[in-house]
Amino acid sequence: MKRDLNELASRISLEDFAKSEFGYKTDHEKTSRRWPTLVKDDEKIIIGNGKDGDFYYNVNDPSDKGNAVKFAFNRSNNWKDTFERIDKYLEQPHTVSRDNRMIEVSEDRHIALSRDFQLKELKDRKYLHERGISDETIDSESFKNRVFNKTFDLKEHTNKLIEEKFPASSSKELHSKAVELAKAKNYSGDYISTIKSFNSQQSPLTDIEKMERLSITKAHFDKSDDRKIVNTAFPLNSEDGTIGLIVRNKNLKEIDGFRDIGLWSSSQVDAPKSIIITESPIDSLSHYQLHKPQKAIYYSTGGSPSSNQPIILQNEIYQLKPEKVVLANDNDLGGVKSNIQILDKLEGKNNNLEIGLVTNEKYSALAILKSPNIDEAATRLENALNQGDDFKVVQARRTGDTTAEIQFPKKVEYFQKIEEHLIREKGLENQVVIHRPFGKDFNEDLQNSRPFSLIKEKDDHREVIGKYALASEAKEAIEKQNTLGKEESNNKLLLVTSYMGREIKLAETGPDKKIQFDKGFENDAITQKIEAARANVKNGDMSVVDKLENNLAKTDYKVETDSKGHVEIKKETNYDQEQLSRHRTDGKDIQTSINKDVSEAVSGKKGSVDLDNQQYKKDKGKGL
Image (cartoon, rainbow, N blue to C red; front, top):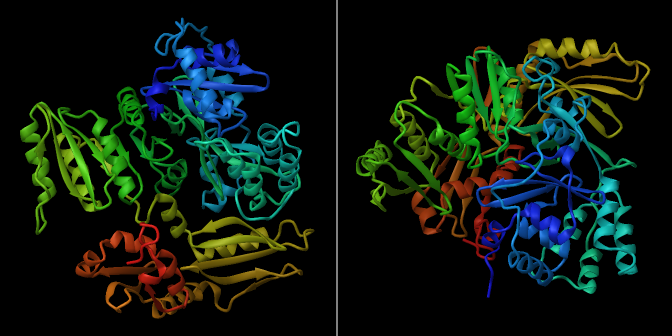
């Protein structure tokens, strides 16, 4: 009989389980009642307590985290041993429960946790500069000591992984093959994920099966000999200090540790005028650089809010009492859903309505309402969702004395109606502001507002060292940079701008360090951009057809220039809803599927997409 692993995990005190069954001990120096830290040999784990059970994080291996069942499985290597250990534990009485841990409390918990995460001063700013974030922003009082570097030693991590998964004593052939791959460079494929997966199968793999997988695996490593990668880290803090990290570089986007009850924030200010909430710290930095709000505190959730984060945000708002709460999440469906999750927990003049969302369905979503006056609440939301449409959404259905649900089309405009409805119903009109970016997020807005990039080039390596809004600023920057580091004769400086993937070179330096500007650089920079944009538009029409040449969608492009010389390519995609319905898909699916093809088209490859051949449907193996 299949066992419910989540239910099983919820019954286990992970702290007690790790001690009694696996020999871990409490590290009293770094433990608090809420966050026990356990050690065994060189291994250190931090335990948290969630509403669905205990969870853990291995300080030395960010991928080793999860619930009690995952903890046991990662240390038993097979399901039989995992279940035997769990069953043995659950049959015995225990003095430490999940809800009442008898642990010494350390006042220096936040210091210990920060040390566990091995944060370093932000000296390597390459990633932030590439995202258009200036040193002025990074060094401002708002963000000083809020962003760090964290070094990941790939070589050390890989060697530990090999010894754990392929000890020479058990299989010399496997061990040798793993070591051989670990020494490789510049291959595609994810070697680390592959060997980690050997212990995540429902049925453990045999040595022969592991060998077969290794034989077709190619290592994916950094080019440097020492293989040390410097990441940018944003600490997630709770009342106990740092409990996790948002870790970023050009090719990495992950959470180390816990996010569920933590938030990243800018520096605190007295009597803040506004609290500004974003999904990502990069968006907070970008929003600040673009808008320079006075006396503002930024908070980031590190992605879509967890169930606990909106509650924590409300607590921060209650304590800080800002004049405004600004929701500055992404300008897409996910961003609007994040706004709704936060609004649902914010306290206003009327707090009798709760709205939860379920969006598992491909074409529809479900709003779950809870209110003491459920009939009136459901009717008002139903009217709000129906307003302005030619057809009505499915009517509200009462599901209990205080609950109801409404199914509605899974389109961003309906979610925005719920967003507006919550603000009205809770009486938050004078407190909450929705600030949407023009692009997908505020970092995209920042990069679009600073279209000129100064690049240092050496051999095949490029590094963005500055982004500028005006051609005159860019010219001044390359002239200033060109007076520095003249001894590095192999370095070249480039000044470029781009549109839709096409790079336009505006200036460069040669070996003699003389700057060669394109003709009429300052006057013609905008003209060049317009011409490049128009060339893309001319070749950029894209149509989506089926095998009978029926048009399902068509994308048209046009160039717009404002009085300040900003050039934008606007695209408009029209869908044939009748044809799309016949193919059992919708415009969102098409739009997502043809992004790559549209990109190629606007680079000069006019054409169409044949959906029957490309098989864009998510149902594998089925064309349209």
